[in-house]
Length: 168
Image (cartoon, rainbow, N blue to C red; front, side, top):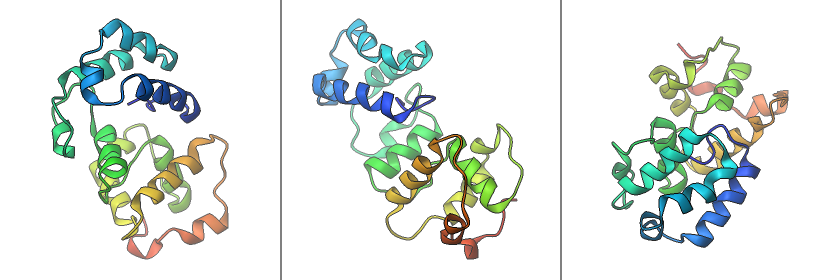
């Protein structure tokens, strides 16, 4: 949630401070909301700060990714990221940068709705490697985090085109 509409470097500083102060869910759940808000303030976006605090308050446990279902402020993107990065599941983590990467590689048009399109998610899932999905997802996100990133022919050559040629 901290990475939504925020550069990774900025979120990392807040994450590290947050984890130092609140090393587990229970510590965060029992913290005064104003203390949480103050620590999260450098992220900006008041709606996100409210969502993070609401999610912390709503979560009773986080033993499986299914524990995230129905938690306010946690949508498909956050759930997919937790499934992949925290639980090691083979799921695509699709944000606007990942959509941009695939649209450049496969030359198909996209719009603001594409990142939420179930067909696009199925397409992205079809391209996941059988192993090291976490690294693959991080690689796509990191590669395209720079808005000026170009997709070179060397990068295009490693995308598993044989699984699917285009997004329908």
